[in-house]
Length: 566
Image 1: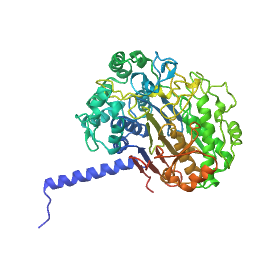
Image 2 (image 1 turned 90 degrees about the vertical axis):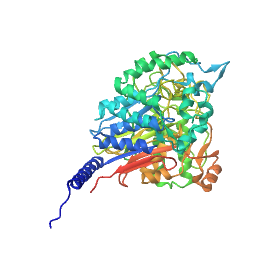
Image 3 (image 1 turned 180 degrees about the vertical axis):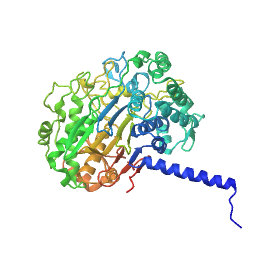
Image 4 (image 1 turned 60 degrees about the vertical axis):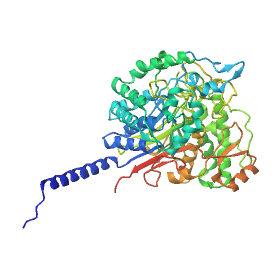
């Protein structure tokens, strides 16, 4: 008798074949794409955006909004961001979504009885600057994406509403900040277990207020946030809690799109963010200095390698402390990234002995402008040739520790990134000068360093990091290991990290550098501080080792690359 198949089974097979064919088509869309973020849920959201027909810009926005839910202690719509991107057409552009100081801000707002009070700039109402990341993400999506911003918001909102399992890293961060978090009822309510204790790893975190905020923005657009109902809530809270931010500050907020900083390093073009990012400037400056030492011929496991990079860092960070700020308010010399100035600085480096850098240098063009008037990084690329590097932040963990009642949004503490008083270190130990002093509408200096590397006209690397000023050194080391020593991105991120920011005068170094290196550096005259892990770098690229996406092996994250099948 002939073999027959009943109709339900036949339909089941048809459904399976349709699903399989759809999956294959979706995966074909992903070929040539790469994503790296600090959280698996955010990476999965970015992948889904690509599967749904989006491009790298959509994937970046999906990741960013999701990180504001699942990694909100580092970034979110209560903070700011820098975006460096390269379109498939070859066009390079940036978006500056850095926060701004409220209109009632003033130079001495954190001075009490003649002394700088860093507690005021780091926690509570006065610490909060006007957030910009939401407007930046909206701009990126609307101008360059394929999926509506509304859809991205709805997807992230559902994660906030349904909840997610709290990873150990999140629970540990809540625990270490819980004393400050408890001072603010709406923050404590979300991040405690109902018994006055910090949430535990493995528990489900549901954020209904944040979900509703995302939904309202999806429904009414970003005007609801900047010019409508949302902006009135911070004003109400500020008036009750000694703050100075008003709804008018939100109305005046705007993003900018300055030309990126570009420098050459050997046969590569390094594309970075201009001020108020110090990262783009000083990554370029340090590379320009190191060009005079043939780093590709120096063993990366030698004391000389550590020493030369450290000396270049010291010179650059001394310049950072004096010259860098918001270019709309301060004169920032173009000469900081000139090859001629770098050559003069390179001559100051003794290859065998730690030097004393007493103050900043004097670059050429010191009256010229660049323009006419705890943190996360993620990188995305797609098979069309679009590449994106985004570094986003609310500054330190949980920012100001403030969640404005009824919003679910963790507000930043970026006012601490200003120089609140000359010589007074901020939360990261950085000091600054008048160029980075507080002023109404001004954007504070940042170390965020989203970077894209080109070889010829082809993008080969997108990299950035989290970790305050160590962002600059992390980004720099990744570039040197991959470009000079031909390491894969994974190999580069496994290498020991070290950092020097001029003041304090010490190398912060990971213990994995080994005792031989540490002892040799001490003999050269360096002060050593052996610290824990040196930040968190995320990178994607194809530097000759095939398409890679790598999250920092020191911390939680997820990276995925879809190589083109040959």
